[in-house]
Amino acid sequence: MKRATVALLLVVASVSASAEIEKLAVPSDDGFRFYWWPKLPAVAGWLHDEATSLKLTANVLVPDGSSFGDAPAVMYAKALYKPRSPEIHSLQELIDSDRDAFEHDMPGLKIERLPDLTTGDRRHLIQLAFAPKGEGSWERVAYGEEDDYYLIFAISAQHTPI
Image (cartoon, rainbow, N blue to C red; front, side, top):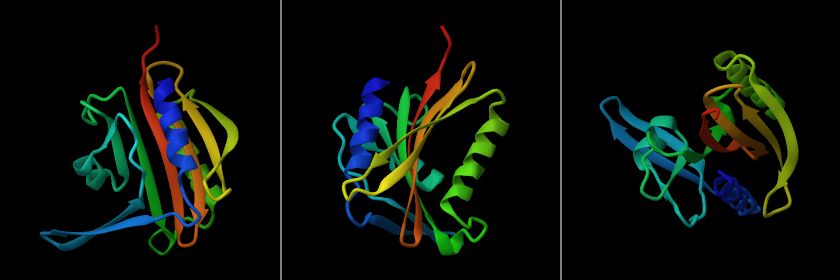
């Protein structure tokens, strides 16, 4: 888990002066489906999971030799296009919404504000840690904003008490 957290920190630190957004248009039975997410650097020991990325509309990385379903930890990066998310009026509102969703799904969840992360262009990302009391998903999430996008970078791992 420690190596995964270090990998997330390396990913966030590499976000450059203008976060590059990958934009995809994938044909479907209903026309085209549009996807966008932050472009991530290659991370040693991790692979892009295209099928899960499309399903979750996020750039998903899994450890080499793992799938999303059996990985001990996964990383993902999401870009919410502001014009397509009119219900979100600010970065703080996005963070509050995430907190509410986590607390609803995992009652008794411990949420901790961590020191901000600094990107390659010296922007600050707000960082939170979500930890379940029992079994569940442990997450470390960094939130930012750039131009027309809200950005989310996360590492998620399964927590099983000893």
